[in-house]
Image (tube, rainbow over all chains, first blue to last red; front, side, top):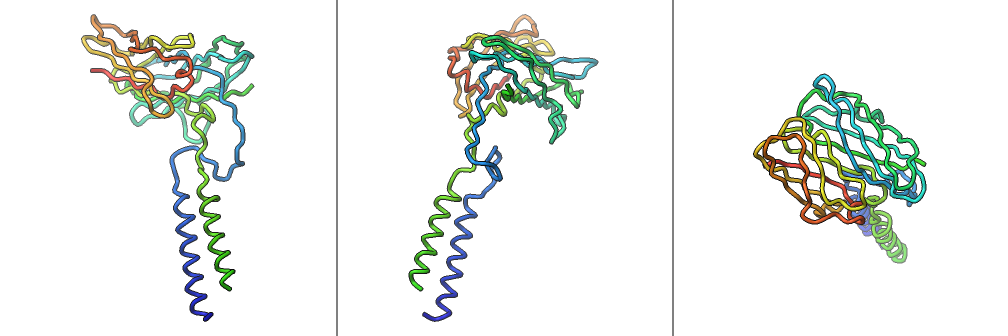
Length: 138
Length: 123
């Protein structure tokens, strides 16, 4: 077989492999496993959010109180994070975990609250979005 | 030589089919990262939302910063797949900052575990 045919087939293989890999590496705006161990078990927290209260002080919204119910049969504590947005203002600073607080240990079927003080108080009177995350830590 | 090419092509098919095709997404049920998102499209600023402590949700009490008068407050609750699992509305008059909305159909205990989004509007 001539060198030209080998070269053509080689280029074809390279082109096909490039297209093949490239198709599935499109970034998506979601949590993914790139650079991570595969199939790490992260338990789903046994908790329900029961109450959300924003607190205002001197015309600024300065904190959120999140109440969760432990729906499990044993005690747990949780790490709760909140990001709240008012127009262009965001209560947390990107890349930090400042707007997170751990709850005390909550008994089975009981509720517990956590106050999260915003790093950036929201001066705007119109709050339009809140995002709450829960991670079971014990 | 032909055998070499055949093996190369099989290798490409293998890698593209297995290595790259495996989803890079984690299950949305993996954790409660982003456990609850509240979208308030009213201009009244929702200061409080009480979902209750029972396993099911039959009504939700909302507290607003400014009072509502002569308007209807609507609420829609969806799960992690964006399927609506609860909806309700309440006309407010006279003026009040606290509104209790009874859902048209209760949210079951299983549905509550998947609750992901709450959307509030006024009309």
